Image 1 (cartoon, helix red, strand yellow):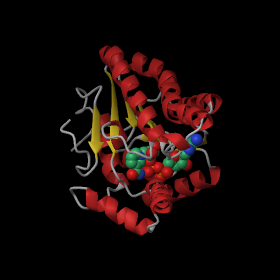
Image 2 (cartoon, helix red, strand yellow; image 1 turned 180 degrees about the vertical axis):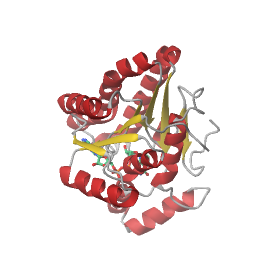
Image 3 (spheres, protein in one colour; image 1 turned 90 degrees about the vertical axis):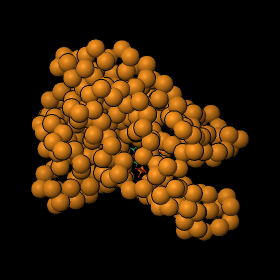
Image 4 (cartoon, rainbow, N blue to C red; image 1 turned 180 degrees about the horizontal axis):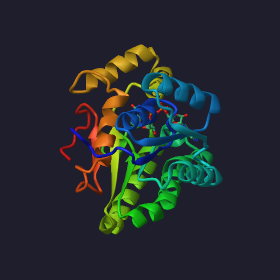
Length: 263
Ligand code: NAD
């Protein structure tokens, strides 16, 4: 299917690996001008070189700690200077510290607020004027199954991703008239280093191996397997397309059916 994305400028945040990277790769395949950012320069350079080897195209890259507003400002400025106004923003972030309510202190809450909610707010604020001027834009936040079905030992993720969901819905009401859509994609158990780390944490808590934790996660999923990053990325790219122009304010899960509710 032709998605009419060729030549669009895309910024995918926190994209040196996992779902963010898979998303950047799919946008490159669609012929977009793609920028990625992440905190660690070495990881970023490794990713850029691997992507160049696969696609013969290099994404623009910027070192950015998305917890810092000044890094976000510099990143958006550099992308605009090199690639032009951003048409498609994918707000991704690292997962916040895992833990049950009683193990999480004020610093953890503050960090997660910056990392999950404020990063999305700040990037969005900086790209909106360009989108309004073009009368076209797509903002897609990567959230989590936890917004529909909270995960017991992920109190920070549950709380702040719900805040992102409410922020996105509110914004979608205001920017629809500019042909800008705002949506959330909620991954289920997707095999990346984040999931691996969570399995290691759970293994320590429960005294079984992380392999057993991963296998039991897969067993809980109606599809009987973990998801792949490209499966989440495919929905994100679709939501950015012309065809998805009437989908806004939505949260769509890519979870193999693991969320038990009907909506
Ligand atoms: P990942 O850990 O594989 O990748 C996270 C990326 O974020 C990396 O590129 C890392 O460098 C970057 N990053 C982390 N902190 C950063 C910072 N302060 N500044 C800039 N970049 C930073 O994660 P993933 O599995 O691809 O998940 C992506 C998002 O989806 C995360 O927020 C995660 O919590 C969420 N999620 C993942 C799953 C899953 O099963 N993998 C499920 C639900 C939700």
